[in-house]
Length: 130
Image: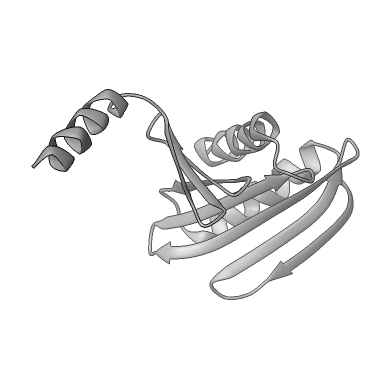
């Protein structure tokens, strides 16, 4: 009974905050209910089909003047590797459902949270434009 009480207190204290969990060397956290941060990747789901999201990712990479761009597109997934301002960037696009697509962004060697969020903001901006 005491364990459950301690667990409930910890859960109450963490509600409303960004929380992180470490399990066997894997780290996952949620920030503002919008981004999922997992092992240096920031993952976000967009309410758009995979073709529109892929196009937004390509425009984002072009807008950021990426070098050494390598694109690999399949039916339900895609991968863009590039170098932006001397940082390696990997954008992974994954089909989830008809109007839901998951995008994972990894920047640098260990994962740059701020740069990844900037890239996600640019992708969301291109998706918002008609």
